[in-house]
Amino acid sequence: MTGFTAADLHRAAVRVSAAATAASAELNAQDGLLGDGDLGITLSQGWAAASAEPLPADVGQAFLALAKAFQRVSSSSYGTLVATAFMAAARATKGREQVPHAEISGLVAAARDAMMARGKGALGDKSVLDPLDAIATATAGLDDPSAILAAADGAADATLAAFRTRPNRLGRARMFGDRSIGIDDPGMLALRRMLDGLRAG
Image (cartoon, rainbow, N blue to C red; front, side):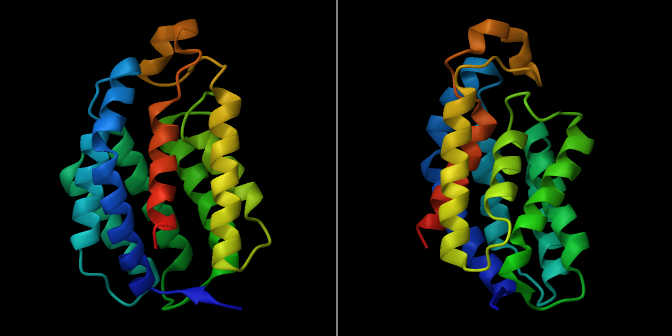
């Protein structure tokens, strides 16, 4: 059984930061259809800070450092949710310098639950919670990194497609009602771009 370390987290953060920067204009434009139009800025600045953060060997403390980095540069709701996800992972991995890849599904589920509690969202609202839930399910029982990423990819794409024909029911986007039908949720798309960064490794 293989596992990941704080060094792996750093390498992942660097790749995701590059992807977030590349997708910044796209995400701003998508967010502008349903919100403030600053999601690309939030994501690129947050990941830039996270990728520059020195990480301790303790994986739990490394996740906590990533959360703090995001919080320092982003006070937006999405930035807060990303930090919340990192903090949930920090609690589950504290005291360990290597975490089995088989635990990734559980870490995603823990992040989903913490984000639901923090943001008062529910599954089915057409938000980032929905692909996270699908990814947690799709990666359950897997311990090979390539298989986990492939399963996460498929789950994210399928969720985007499934919810494209539904209205948003969470956050500012919910005010658009049926006008949000046919528009990808910006938070879902942001998660898709983060996965693109991991694939680039």
